[in-house]
Length: 436
Image (tube, rainbow, N blue to C red; front, side):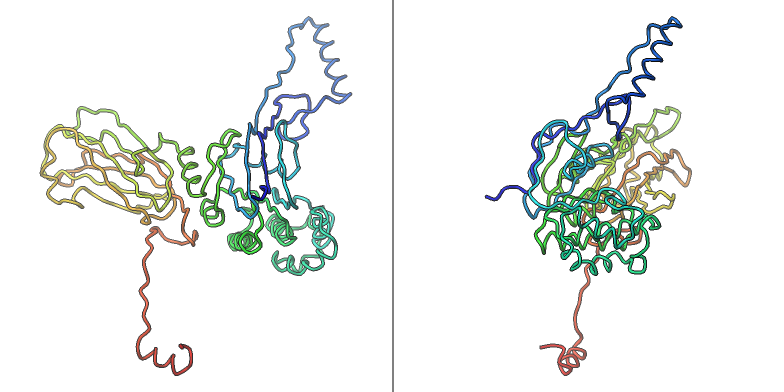
């Protein structure tokens, strides 16, 4: 069995909060001579003024990574998932040899190309052409290799007319296009890409994803990809790793890791609501909630998931023609979906006797488009509103499976296209030699 191309063994990274001097985000460095003298003079001044109770500045520890162990095989495409501050970027920086771990070991067997921040590895005073050769040299490429790939890099980045312009005059999008083109075309064994691709426009993002798929499948190289675009991760990656508070909490098939991320990131309070009791009302809503197929509350779901809207309702006095309805609104306040209790059984309104009732409305997958939805509830009798609850639950549907995450519209219904070639057209096609 071949050795893994990336090995992390109990990898940890600690930062110190509140040190004398910061050499990077949250990092600590020993004080300089000037800082030492200044600090000592302040202590002497405090002593002369009788302020002897000054406490030394505390050095709080922050563990960005804690005991992370991973193995990634050659040719794997792995997506790193987690909320902001989970430790994803720290892990990539350690693997890219930008920062040193506090404890543990990371071993990479192969040439690494990293794209972590806009302009990484570029000198602002050099032109795009010069930076291609500089970046290639940093990645360990010989000039003859860079010469062979140069035209493809410039063409992919779509900056032909600006290639001899200093990159300090580039937009952030141009930076990213050129940086990704260099990293992807200079044949690294390991390609590490952070969320920096989000800077580019949608067309270029699709182009980058296509290139990474080619690199992974056609060339058998290893890709480590961080993104908050779950559709891109599920499309590109076969395996996922979920980080939370600097630790690995899920490691497996990409789809399962995405579902674990949604469950861990969900604010269940937004998915469930209990309403205060108002005895003066003849009937009222008691509760509302959004639930997964397994019965757990969920504020984050995939578009393909079936979910249930559960409503608690109390009738204190039977009323004629009592009707309950729900609507889903998008973030712009537009009504996207409406349903009422008569959809399944028109006669149910006559059976709403005094007591507590529970309603469950099952919403199939692939119906609603990915966005955030607000749930509104109302009940009425003979067009008189008896209880209304607005924005009582909030939940988000995300696209994790569609081949076209840019599909416009309010619905996500996928309709099969039936196809046939009409006989007359078939004869003409055969005559023209288009068909065998």
